[in-house]
Structures are given as structure tokens and as C-alpha cells.
Amino acid sequence: MTDSYYTNYVFLALFLAVAIIFPLLPICVAKIVAPKKPSPQKQDIYECGLESKGDAWVQFKVQYYIYALVFVIFDVETIFLYPWAVSFNKLGLFAFVEMIIFLAILAGGLAYAWKKGVLDWK
Amino acid sequence: MAVDEGLKSELAKEGIIVTTVTDLYNWGRKNSVWPLQFGLACCAIEMIATAASRFDLARFGAEVFRPSPRQADLMIVAGTVTKKMAPQVVRLYNQMPEPKYVIAMGACAISGGPFKLGYNVLKGIDRYIPVDVHIPGCPPRPEALLHAIMTLQRRIEEQTLGEGPKPRWYDKDAPAEFPVPQFGEHDLVPSFNKQVWDAKPIVRPVKA
Image (tube, rainbow over all chains, first blue to last red; front, side, top):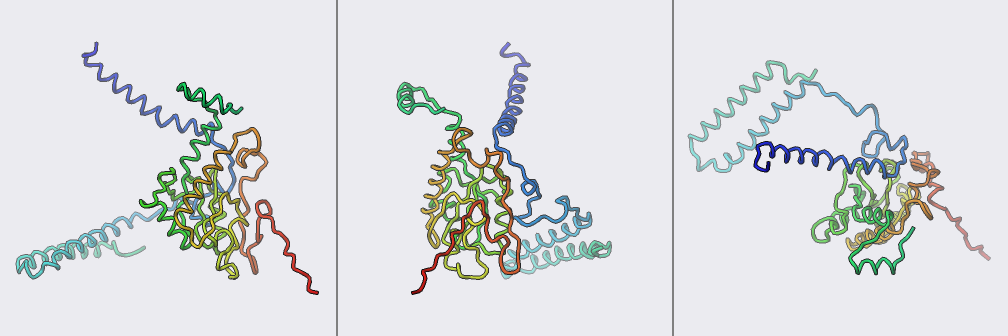
């Protein structure tokens, strides 16, 4: 029985049972023994101690995602630019041309995004 | 029902540990006091130093500074409470789940400190919320905060679950929240909470 193929599944079932009971037990115990004193302010939305205005489910425009993506690309570009600028004298003409091409590609991307109307905040 | 101390130690010698639910509760509570992560003024720097490696608040199980009042047990009022900030502090206290404790850290939090005469400074946070431990000092050293945590732990040890004097959170009649002060014309309204703070009338000597 011990070297049966299905023995492996016994361990799996054991792990599954432990994985379910282990988090459930403290939650249930806390539900039973925790002192409860609900109040309107306690149930209120947490806004750093200020009185909450409106709902917590604030929606963002989906266009913001592309806007943020464009920002991140140029953010990463800066990270590339710094080490290049530090060792600019050692790297020579080849690295300079490489960097110009890299910048041109990103600038082209920005121009494309601009033309597509990503930067217009509607 | 408390276990006789002599019997307890006799049994402990034989390798049997006897305890009560209350002791177990308090043992768990006092060793996992999670503070709310917020600082109001310079005392907060000492609070940060207490939590960092040199003073190591983790030895007392209180190193987990929670960014939300929902998960916090302890409010360390570290610094000057301005009248602008007082409503937020009281609201944060109201939003913490029971059981909850308050440490007023530093001269400002306990009385207004050097800024007591300022028009904009609250003269002690204990005017609005019940404070368990006061720490004097300007600012108190991290050792003083550690001492306050230990004092609080000793206070938690003495608490009961139902028998004897009940803590506030087991008392059905005790209020669930404390009134948040509003901005009045000249001062916060109300200027103190009658439930927690007893204003002694000022008796001035009569001039002859």
C-alpha cells in the first residue's frame, strides 16, 4: 500500500485539509471570542481619519492605463540614459549612435501615441 | 475562577501547566499589541527609533505597525495634537476594533507640553479618548516607550473577561465610540469628553 501510486494523493489530500483548516480555524475562533462593539464610525470607510466623502469604489478611466504605460517607457529610458551619460567619454561614437537610435525609436512611439490621441485628457 | 497560585506552582514542578481562559487570553493579547502607524510630531521619531533594531520593539511583540486602524490594538499618540488634528485622532480611535489601548507619548500628548498656551494646541489627548499609559518627557527616550509598553502589558494581564470589573468592550452599556469634536467658533466643540475627562474647577486664592 505504501508504495502504491495513489499514496501520493493521500499526502495531497492531507495538505489540502491542513491548508483549509489552518486559516479557517483562527478566523472562526476570532469570530466567536472577539469582543464586538460595532458603531457607525467603525463601519465607515477608512480615509486616514477624515470623514469619508462618497464611495470607496472610485473608477478610473481606462485611457489612464495607456497614459501610464507611456510614462513608464520614458521612465525606463532615463535609467538607460544615466549610465550612458556617466561613461559617455569612454564609449565613443558607436554608443552615441546607438543611443540616438534608441531615443528615436521611443520618440517615434511617443509621436504615434500622440497622433492616436492618448495624450488628450478627455 | 482563578487557580490557586500554590497549587499552580506545585503542578508546574510535576510538568503540568494549569491556566485559565482569562490568563490565556491576556497572554495572547499582551504579547501581540499591534500599534497604529501614525506620528504627529517629533515624538514619532523616538517611536521609530524604538521600533528599529537598536531598541527592538519586536521583543515585546509590538513591532507590527499597522497602516490601518482595522488591524491595530494600540494607538501611540506620539506628539503634539493640534486642534486641527484632534478630530482625526478621535475618529481613528473610534475605527479601531476592540480591545484597544492608548499610550499618550510625550509632554504634548499628555498635556499640551511646551505649546500648552498655544491657541491651536489640544491640552492633552485624554480629554477625548481614554488613555491607558502616559509617558512624560520631551521627547521621551525609546526606553520610556518600552517601559510604557511593559506597563501596558501588565495592565492587560490584570484584565478580566467577564467576572469582576469588566473592561469597556465587554460592557454592553459602554459606548462603542467617543464623540468626535467639531470645529467651533473659538475652540473644539465639545472642548472635552465628560466620559473620560473630569475637569477640575480652578480654585484661585482670594486676595486679601
